[in-house]
Image 1 (cartoon, rainbow, N blue to C red):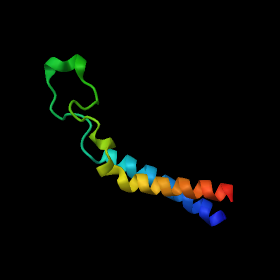
Image 2: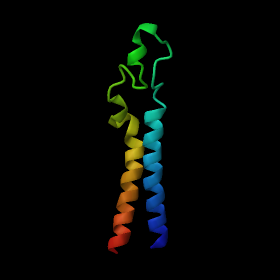
Image 3: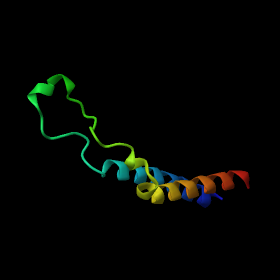
Length: 79
């Protein structure tokens, strides 16, 4: 029982870490070229990134690991 809880927790954490890594590694977060006219508008937010990093294609392994980990944790707490 303890091993299934440990495995579930590890899978859950690995899934979340994988999804965070996939979102971060998609590209740079800010433009490297700076324009002196935009001095008041400089932020670290991307201009044209969109929500593509939240899609199924980039995150399915992380979602699968997190889902299996959650299922193992729930099943081990029930039985």
